[in-house]
Amino acid sequence: MIAFCDPGLANTAVIAYDERTRTIVAAKTFTTPADGPTPDFADALKRAELQAARVLAFMALHDCTLLVAEKYEDIPGPQRGAKHRWTTPLVLAKLDSRCDGIVWQSPKTVMTRYRSHKATWAAKRFGLVKGDTLLQNDHLRSAGCHLLAWEDAR
Image 1 (cartoon, one colour):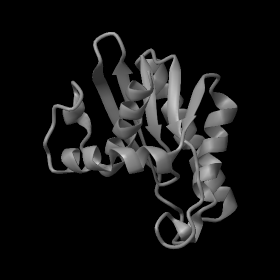
Image 2 (cartoon, rainbow, N blue to C red; image 1 turned 30 degrees about the vertical axis):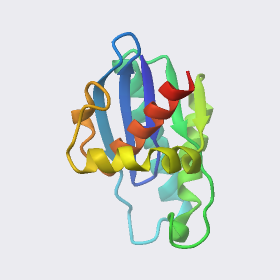
Image 3 (spheres, rainbow, N blue to C red; image 1 turned 45 degrees about the vertical axis):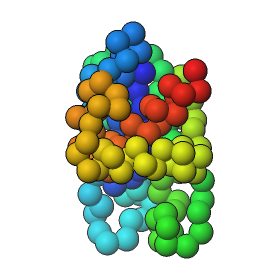
C-alpha cells in the first residue's frame, strides 16, 4: 500500500492506494483550525506536528509502506498561499523528520499535467482510478493527481 499526500497546515489530504488491485481504498482530509486569524510560530508548529502524526497514523492503519507527497515550491503572488507561505514547509519538515520512506513530487509538474483530471473529479465524474469516488474535496483530488503521476512514471 502506498499513501499519497497533499500536505498543508490547515488541510492535509491523504489517500491509501493498493498497488496490487490499483484501487484507492481509503481517503481522509485532516483539518487543524488556527488559534487566531494569523498563525504564530508556536501555533503553526503544534498544528504541523498534529498533521504529521495524523498522516503517519493513517499510513499505519492502512499498512502503507511508502508516502508520496507534494513537495513545496514557492510561487510568488496570490496563486499559492502567499500570505503564510512558511506554514506548508513546516508540515513537510515534520513529515520528513518522522517518516522513513518519502518520495517527493513537484506540485507544479503534477498539477500542470493532471489539471484536467482534477477538474473531471471536481465535476463528479469518476472512473479514472478504481475507488476515486472517495476523492470528495480539492485536497483529496490533488492527492489523486499525485497518484496518477506516480502510476504514469512507472
